[in-house]
Image 1 (cartoon, helix red, strand yellow):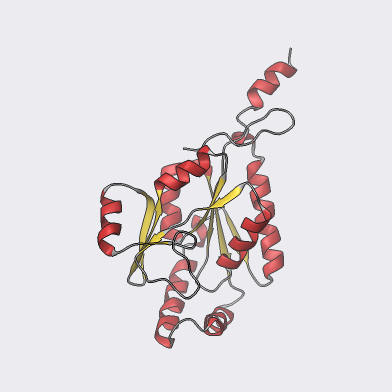
Image 2 (image 1 turned 30 degrees about the vertical axis):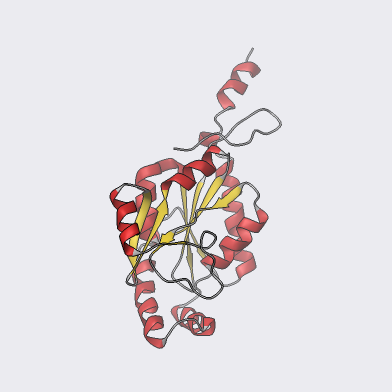
Length: 216
């Protein structure tokens, strides 16, 4: 599914990384994703399609592709999603075509998706997927963060807390699990994981040719 990306000074090429960040709502996933995108020029965001209404400040095509339920159903029926899920009365899905285009352009792709999406993506792309789950320091802290965002009603916050417990129960479906008690420290760990995954032998598609030259 992945394409070759940029070469290093030895002429190596590597396979792209499909880098998944998941967390309960309010645990800091979106903040870390923004910091990662700002720091990593080879990384591009996968923009999900959603049936929910835009929040204040959100831009169609940048934050999400906002579509109605009929269009979402059509896209799902036509297999235009790599993964999709039903969350809080709304639907979210990853359009396949933009991801393929980014990989073709030599980009790693960042996914801000939940455990259902991560599982579906892994089933499709296997070893090209790296899954990172971010935990809050405690459920009490998570609750306070959701209140402090001041974007949801009490009812919605309670639903998010109930869902958070379910999401945390799927922690063992991820390759890496981090606790976000300090956003800068957690970001540095995520960045280190991405760097290490890029260097894995299995992603170095030009390595065999280099070794053959070295042996002659």
